[in-house]
Image (cartoon, rainbow, N blue to C red):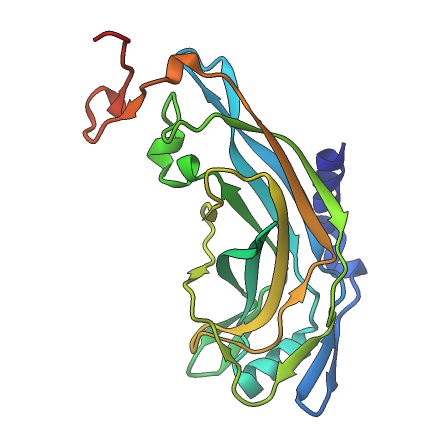
Length: 267
């Protein structure tokens, strides 16, 4: 029911967002500027099923797909921050929460502004402030070839049973935009593409996930503000599926027989 509701919400947003979403306000402060984010949220959550086995009768999971809606900034504010501090992207931080603390899974950036003509100084602001990405099990994150195999590698046999949202207490809900400097991001930042964005979530995905965003200058690889957490956490539950026919399965290195091979016991 949750997934259906989120899907309908995402359709509604894509059609009406520009006409009904309030713009976040840019306010001068001692540090530089402050932005109270408006309109952000998780707009889609769904399991990515994986049919496996010799006749593809068993269903496990590749992982989950998530859709994000970013704070709605005015055209004038985006252009102002671009000229002042080089704002050109949102920076997304995806973290997994567990008993041992917080583990950062990935950073990725999505542009909010494009230089359409360097000679004339032309700028184009990205109007559709949404982005989609996938958190996949390690076995599915390897490659598209691995995802197309009749059996998963790494003895993967987990299926996502439920994906839910839980209210999350956040601190520092405003963006503090730094006038000078910015914070370098030491880890690799994946660049947005219109293809599949895949984050390796590890061998197990069960647990809680936190999404944070910051303003970003992709040219100098610095966060231009603090990270602001979405007010909902994602809760994933999973269970194993028995895959007897996939025992001793190997993904071959060459392309013969489509690169797949099933082993028989006692061979």
